[in-house]
Length: 263
Length: 377
Image: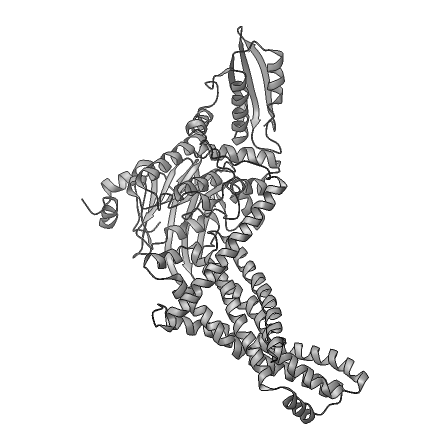
């Protein structure tokens, strides 16, 4: 671990309940390094926040973790198994356990909401069309959109699209839920409701949640573990419980970030 | 671990049913059936309460939830109370969440098709609407052109030059290739017939007049419909999806002037030039076949072409070309502007732009041919 980073959790790199581990990760576009020396671990059941100032590579880190982008160096381990060292078939097996909700919802616009949620089920299970539809109905009901199965994404509001994105992410009852800026573009109340929904689903599904966000309200109300990426130093400067980081961090930048520069 | 789910029914008290859930309730090949419960309830009509015992359950996911949702629906139908307290904590929370927001009234869509006559009626009305909208668009485009001549149209000249470059010079290769081949085909078919009359020489007339009056403009028009019309529709359609057109309108900038006008102008300017180029390559294609296959001399062929092709033939071709230019630009821009807000709508707009562009070209050719005939040009 780089000397710069501080840690507020006692948990070290390995433990019985470590779900995801990032080891010595370097992210780069060609020769341009986005972040380097990233090392942190996420416990099973954590709500893990990836935070940092704009352009520091939060979404890029998420893309490395879900398998959309190959690391320039380092490893991403799921239950101790290296994701990028695995062959494509094994990787698909890993990805079967991911659910991802994208910043812009990323619903397939030519499909109805039920079809959007049904596609992962079609791809990974051999359920009948009727069963898939029933599951899609259930997932829509879970996000409060019962009855909207046959709508197209263009016919519903942005907040509803976000919730459908969440319903699609939980379609396969994943172990790990990834969120890229879940509250981007939502009003404070919708954003709070979405946070509650994420929390509720995490509690009942028992999934590990990884969230990219810079909404302080979300960070403190739902996060119990985090990593802070610094855009200038191009590495992580802290990891641990965000509330503890706010109160105890000696890094002025982290302190400013977590107190909105007010304290 | 047991791979499948087990279900057992035990009566509890006078009017109670205890459903014992055991094994793994995970999504496998099929979702758990609820018909067993239905038939059990049919034979025990006095049941008033259902409870659950899940102590022997090893695993669960959404499969269990769908089963429980079905059970709740059956119980509601038979006015039976369902007690969820014997279920795992997470399951109870999820069931609560799923029923927290009641289904919005009227949200569900009516399934099934409308009757045959209704569908014909709907489609006719839609066709009439789209014809009206198309004409309105043409009208607005004309007004926009008028604003241009009065110097009041707002658009960026750099956009015009960029479009001119894309529609004009970048199309030279494909226009040359296709025109050369069309010229060859005309010459080949024509000469094969003319040779019977000993009039092989006149193949130069046939190719020259054919290319100048009709084929040059038509082939260029069709290439433009496929190449440029589709591009216009896709560009404007994507701008519609990204709300870029709304952003222009809210600034008080007419999308007609800013987006449609430069594209239309570019095509009106470039079509005649490309058509001239196409006629030239058509004649060269005819020359190539005549010289290599039918033993006609190069100078002979060119002289014959010069004799046959009059300036009025070329003018006819260029007039047609300008008309096709307007039609292709209007079809492409119209489809783009009225595009829906989704990625599939952009694809549909590009397809419609090409199909309607080619259709309009062929219809226009028919009208123009009759008009030129009547005028004796």
